[in-house]
Length: 454
Image 1 (spheres, one colour):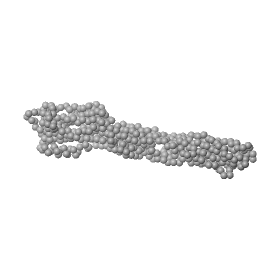
Image 2: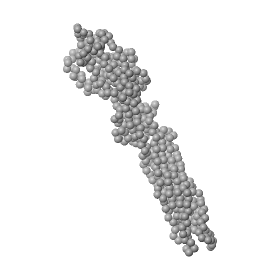
Image 3: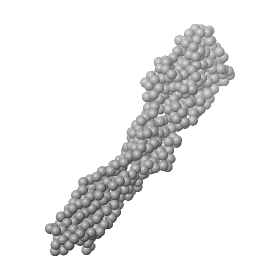
Image 4: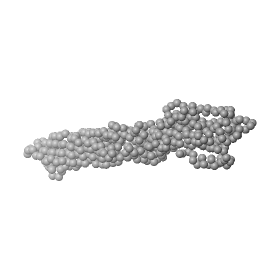
């Protein structure tokens, strides 16, 4: 919990919300040792009675694998963070060297010719684990220093009374260094965001799809690879004139020496989000007689893929609100009911703020308008904005607005305080009368300028 809450500081009164973690698996393979065959040429060559020639063909490469977890936190902006899973990093070299040799013998009229020799491929491998995802400037190194080809003494019969002995040893030096760089994340709008350490979160744009944030991430690292081999050969001739040592000489061969920035194959994934439905901009209660009540609903649907936490806050005016908060499951809906029961004649304007865990619309305002009038001698019912009767309860009595589906059971979002659903939220004051009919236009324009976001 502390890890996730550290991604972002709370905005306004809302706590920080975070998505379900999404597992990521990064893997990269570099066939760095798959290079062209190296021909050493005849060594020592020249007037030497015997020379050796090697054909060296390396193969294999370097692999990097690790697991990580993606998190998203809000309210706005969306903060994205990738963290490595401890103990899952693996950096390895895996390959081999094919050696082919031939001996050229130049004994003049006695014998001149090439004698082929063959040595099978000998593998090498090494692996090292690392953690976490980023190493704060450190590197991971693996090496395969060893004598992969033991000393071989190869007798080569040349002609009668002349034998050649070839003694070969091979000393390879294989190593690779991993230097992590970071994680590249591509958002749905095509923007690329680079996270260079585990303690920094990226600010991502809101998704076009309010129910889901679709991302693509790759692991980036610099890989330095080196493969050298030293071939030591000693040639001896045993002739009818007696043994004759040609000489011993090393043949150093650099096969690979590269540094390359690697971007792993991208991993596609998505974070499901809660999303609030569009709410009405205005609730107009019309003309209501003193002592009467008119109740209007604010329907709230969860069009996202995670539970939507909602909390309603009522502004001043002779209005009541039920309930105080609700958690709505994906695909479900709930209803906040606002009831107007005037006690003072005149126009009344107020608002309801509906706060939610939707990262795109954490707070939406609904304007409330009503006109309280004296009771008419011919009736006791209030009128709606179109002039029809509202069918409300008799004077002095108030409806129980109730709550629609989806706003009942379930855990409340953290740090939210439920109101007692048996006690409606009641605004503290009413607007006095005295404003003329033109006050409605003023109230509407002022309210509309301030709506939607806090």
